Length: 360
Image (tube, rainbow, N blue to C red; front, side, top):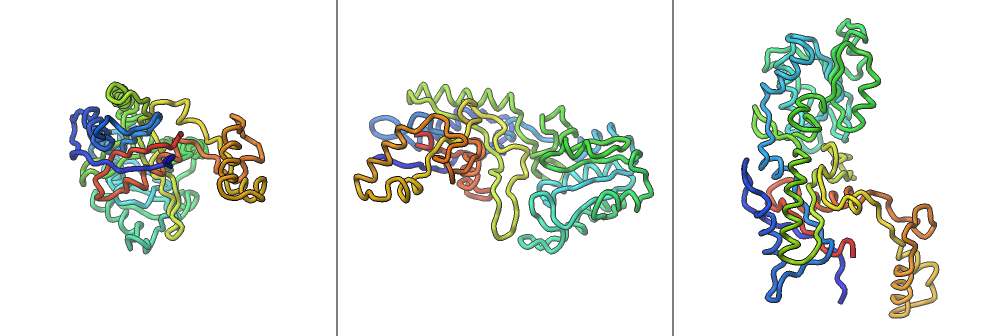
């Protein structure tokens, strides 16, 4: 019987800085697919590795003092900084703010009622946090006064600073270069510009390690070396061409809390087989075929007719009514969403995901 898509979370040892990930990942995958007769793994199976263990093995960490020193290098010591549109997150932004505050004399925090990914400013429904009070307390802990404003113009008026003389840190996670061009201040940077020598995305995609340390997003070039090592070894052991990738947030929206789960700069910072991963699905809508073109067929006759229709489909259905109702998303985003949901973000301890039959 032909099998459908399966996604399986795989365990591995807890990863530390300097660990050689390639053999660990290969062993986890092979243990999962081993049979008495060999390995039950398909062509173009997908192995996903969560970005956190890749960055951790790379030792991709920075301290609050590192952030402070880079912010000081950009704005000078003891500046008044306008921090615009930070995400409301204890593990994503709080430590970044501590580093910014350590450099500044005063901070104007521009914080609308809802942040970029749907978190609310006050009485957060899941954490019960008031992020304006929390972020002010972080700044106060660094000996810095922070004032909250709803928008940038109010912040300028409140601080008595002309727009062309403002020091601005744009904290948007996506579209930040476009947002940066909307300002005409004295010095304007994004989170991607801070410590960009350590990571191509700077502080974007970072996570709290402890109160004085952040784990950055993985280094892409180093990650690609790892992925190709895994791909080559799996081919050597199984004879199958396996797609290997590093995944982050899956970019899906929670229908209850309204939170858009996409706090990383991209869903996949590195992957093999870009000709596949950067493409979009080319699919027919089976339920539309069953309800319309083959409405008079049933049972095996209907199954055969639809199978033949799929076999005969054009290799590019873009713009065709045959593909109506299929979601036009890149494979990297679809796969990352699936991987992120399977692995979760808590204590499942499955940082490796194996997806079979997705491209069959």
